[in-house]
Amino acid sequence: MKTASREVSAVSLVQEALDKAHQYQKDYHIFNFINDVEALKKAAAIDEKIKNGEPAGRLAGVPYALKDNFLSPEGGTTASAHILEEFTSPVTATSVKKLEEEGAIMIGRTNLDAFAHGSSTENSYYGPTRNSKDLERVAGGSSGGSAVAVALGIVPFATGSDTGGSIRQPASFNGVYGLKPTYGAISRYGVVAMASSTDCVGFFTQNVDDMDLLMQITAGQDANDLTTLPDFYGKETGFDDPIKKIGVIKDFDNDAVAPEIRAALARKVEELKAAGHEIVYLDMPALKYALAAYYIIVPAEVASNLSRHDGIRYGFRSEESGDLASLYKNTRNEGFMPENKRRIMIGNFVLSSGFYDAYYLKAAKARTMIVDEYRKAFEKCDFILTPVSPNPAFKLGEKVNDPVAMYLEDLMSVSLNLAGVPGLAIPVGETKEGLSLGLQLVGPRRSDQALLRFAKQIAGEGEPEEDHHIDIMGGND
Ligand code: GLN
Image (cartoon, rainbow, N blue to C red):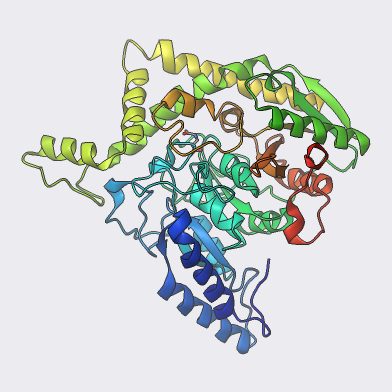
């Protein structure tokens, strides 16, 4: 990505990004906030450093977009939820701090499904973000705004959070790279908690090298997040052989998956074979429990994490607040979106005495099986290649009133979060209608850099950034 230098000023990079942000905002609704004033001030400060010959950082003057569930005092953090509308955070997320220490400049906060609950960005209190390829279609979600900001070239990178697919699915719906790292690779401190045992911070980029740089900058142990792993990024071993064994999950190749996605996978498999890699077909029967287990474990954690929003400490408070109980009730009733409430109810139900064993405990056991299934799979192969989602971007309004249809979007993404393994969404061309297609490359825990290196190897990178779409569907036109 282009950094500021004596030749290219940070102010010009940031101004260009701000101009594009405003230009696209009306049609696509990408941002909840555009950081016009502060971003230019910061850019001027970077230019001053460069002029004085001081180090300005590895991301000097690089404009970026921040998913609006990352805390920082700039612009407030709404998580696209009414209940956080008036909230300005006193703290800054560790990941944001690390990016800004390297000179990156936040030019806007991006739209998401409220509290990151969803797969389309339609659950946002502020209305949906539109797909970068087709204004009638969803951006994907929950990090829809971030994916579209990178896809339209407003910024070279954007942050995301991935609890069950929220980076990978919108990346694949918009033709960009999206990484969900190993659980615990990047600190979650300062990111609005959704489900603490599966939440991951990650990024959207237009190429693999940028992703690698962002990981180098942000990965690492953090005393403010005790689930962060001891530093491992870049220290992976055991992936030196350029010829890899690539797993393909048999069960994911079925009629529920759109023909163009199956064709994209088949084409990629042929390319890999032609390049000398070995394909290993995997039976992973425990993965059939992943979606059900996810939609028990995640709501249980959501119910707990959202209990802090009571109208007392943060943001919005209902006008209809007589006694304390009605203040809580009305604030939560008016402040949460229907999908938030659904998850709070499901979560409290599965944790309630009498139902705990039947739901939560059973889901926890299924999760253990899934963790074990991935462990066994990675004894047979180096990486696994799967679709990201069963279909390309769907129409706005198509699934938003049918929660089960929306949850089914996450069929092939959630098992990674339950197992804590990394996954990279890779753009692999377009459908006949011009919609983006993506595949997902999955690795064992702590293989993140090796995964990126292999993605680069098979994507034929090193080509101009504009050419990052690999037109594997070309022959079908
Ligand atoms: N679509 C999934 C859900 O609704 C994932 C969301 C996420 O990763 N934040 O739970």
